[in-house]
Image (cartoon, rainbow, N blue to C red):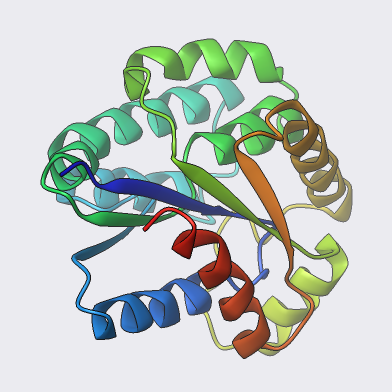
Length: 206
């Protein structure tokens, strides 16, 4: 039995990381085979690349270098973890995937969505998520949440408001462009409500 591949996207501070843990718990309580992972990361080499990309000290990284590092990390993650899990019938929940590159590097870094898309076609081997859940929240609210939290601040968190505004606009663009795959949920609600919205979407594919 083929598994399903669900990705979670949204601005920084939208609550994806918290909700994905709750989704994992709910699905496992139903007896489901669940694999939770993230990008960049998910496997050793990709986690090493993550540390380089998100290191606050790497402020001078060239945008295309950043985009290529994301693509390289994504390819290994897909081959070593995501694809085998799907083939074994698992529900794969991934915190970010190619859509993040389209908006963070394509729009935020101004490389262009199409160019970043082309960079990633080799990396993903035509494997797109079964469904992408977009956590819709004003980017300002997400940044306020980060300021109030005790999480470690990374390089993206330190970007300007203009950058985060561009990223949010980029998400709106791809939500329209890939509306058959991406479904928005209201991430301004309570964690329990946001989790239920996401669960309602996932259950359509179980």
